[in-house]
Image (cartoon, rainbow, N blue to C red):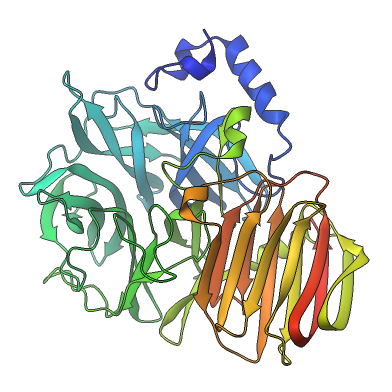
Length: 489
């Protein structure tokens, strides 16, 4: 039995060890395997779940289909770290083997309570007609790392007025009460978020739908996350079904947030500003946050999208997670910056500073496959300026500032193997300023670009040849000066 032909809902324990070993061998032979990102040992990774700090370690779980690079029977996989940089694979955390999660352990979150971590997730089930019935479920992790599921789900019916698309609980505590937001779809196929409450995490009550200023905003809101930062409320979610508007909403599905007053739990309403996309790149979905012991709000996301094929699929694996990012609020917007612990990855350092006038320059000592690059440009009078990286004879990925349009542009038309081409090869957003700083984290098959210390971020998978190592600095239509520093990773 070839693993590629296994049905979506076969279980990992129904497959021989020889077949699993063969799949892992094929995965490990892939030149696009990442070096400093969380990735699956085989198969498909998607939403991050249950991010928390417990017993002196960061714990992070993710959706995992182990037997191939497609969406099948989902497990929760567990990874942990002491420093947000070096992650240890712990193994399967939640198996979909009960009546309430028989067709997949779907997304959820974590909260510490009574010395244990409660993992709150959606169990996916199907009846004999393959009709979905979601359950909200609890698994408990103790100080030894042992995870035990409760014997029954804690919320097993979809409230009237909503469809079976009712999932992804994000839990928190306010005073003596626990609350959870859940992504939902109304029976008129409009997306929304609803609120549950509990006094003990075991018995949950449906409070109702959250009132927002967003009406008819997509057909489903996935992976909601509510938190408060700097005395403001933030609701993150991933709406499906938005049509492109200018430079916005270019991906198949979007992820974004609204920022405003704190959620009124009694009135179940939030007064907020406009919906803003969190990330301007090609591959970013289902962001998930936690508060760490230092008081930082840290976010990770799935570096991928549903319903898009990726070149690594032929090697038996798909997707990774983003680097952890610290969130703050500045000028009425969320700002993201890479957690400072990532600086521990820095190895050999190289620098360059120069002026460019209608030219492209390379420097023998600045090139590579996996690295961090910080480049600050002073605009001058150039029409555009920027960086070509992972560049070779026929390949390059380009990040640039287009001064004529006043936009930052990421172009992966020539990045290597094509990804999601029908959704376009450029992503851009408006940006202003005399200086512009690009901080790039380039891995074997991805890039995360923080613009001006996280005012905007572009996250994308790229699949170049391993020989495409050049870094080129350019200016066209005039002059621009730059200084750059690069660290090998």
